[in-house]
Image 1 (spheres, rainbow, N blue to C red):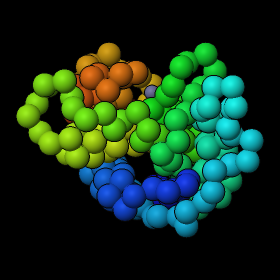
Image 2: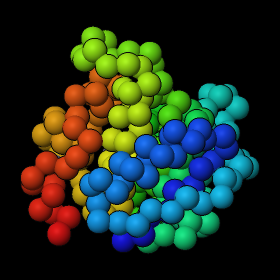
Image 3: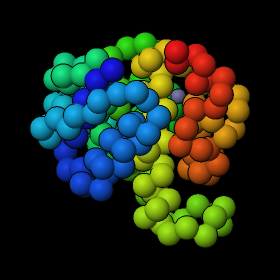
Image 4: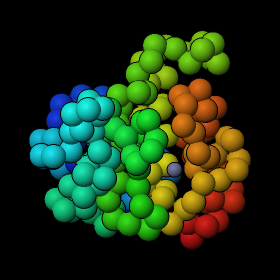
Length: 173
Ligand SMILES: [Zn+2]
Ligand SMILES: [Zn+2]
């Protein structure tokens, strides 16, 4: 599998590195870094001052060179009735997206004594692994430690491991 990462807007080098390292650590895949793209015209919702996640998925799908493509953005994303999303992918689709916007809170609420930058790096890895998991057909997993657990808060993201549980792992093959 080849995964192309598509940075959209300004994406720090550290975020790109965590994303590609995270994917390589879990999936048998080659990862490439696409040229940065600008924010898709029409993605911004004026009244919410947020961005439609679907537009980023469409962009990744359109310009990405991989079997699977993931857009990464610092913009605040939403999807339908959800107030915000950390990421989004369609099951077994080729495009996906993550946003770092809400992953950058300063601490994990005392869950561990790690530095804010380490915690942020882990969240980026987990979200990227999670969304690519959906693109290869994995649905949400009930195991709270599994990276495919549905985690709408950073607290829940922090509880997860940056890896697939045994059951999800078996579904990949
Ligand atoms: Zn999910
Ligand atoms: Zn699982």
